[in-house]
Length: 325
Image 1 (cartoon, rainbow, N blue to C red):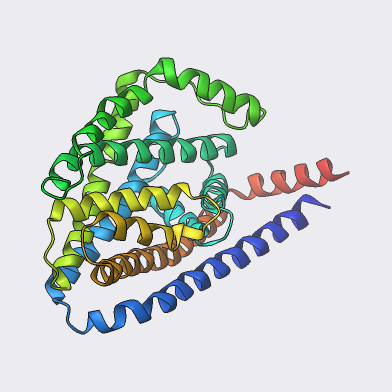
Image 2 (cartoon, rainbow, N blue to C red; image 1 turned 90 degrees about the vertical axis):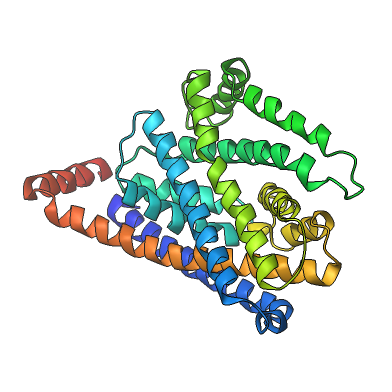
């Protein structure tokens, strides 16, 4: 198959996948509506607004984390472009399989001029950094969240803080990167960075998890339920990460809600309503951000094509024809 035709098919498949992901976002909203519809009629609009803004800013924070990862490894991209690739790629997490958000981000960044290996490698690095940051925040919240709740393991969870810091030490990271490079035949190839730089990436995403916890606490207040904010935040962050790690489940659907209900300390009914509404807000952010990201990425690509010198386009086309012979 000729390169031009292959590129056309790849683009068609990409559009189809994006539309399917948006459809699954809408399906998620519809599926959750029966659980949250009655509760919504009694919500406080101010708290809902705070929860919505916190949810949106938390996802922007993860986009910034990826941008920082790219910069750490020498790839300079515009913040607006990186944010667009992030949100558009994240639509893929609603597809079964758990890898489509990685593929979506990587391919969009590659089309935007980032090397494919660098795009995929830094995406995986940003996922690892955000998980470690979530562990740090959970460790800090656990003693407060479990106080007076009958859960005696709160102080033990503090151990996640030093363990998380050690997890990005070069002595730990080096063999992991070596194995990843061998398994992927060099496609995931990152050089070990100083401990301070890696800790900086982790700390960069800590505010994201504070915002995720704040959003869940605001939803709890909006629905009129009384529960310690630290415990709700702890449950929300733990649920988010457990859902993320359950790879075969699209966007951790159902898993996050179960973990949240088990940890938040609310009765099952109120806990389900809080989990469903918090998820609704995040899905809405993903859908709006994903559509905006797709539009931005497409517009930026079209602008680059229009501004590309004619000689470069002719030369590129000639090279493609020669290579296809």
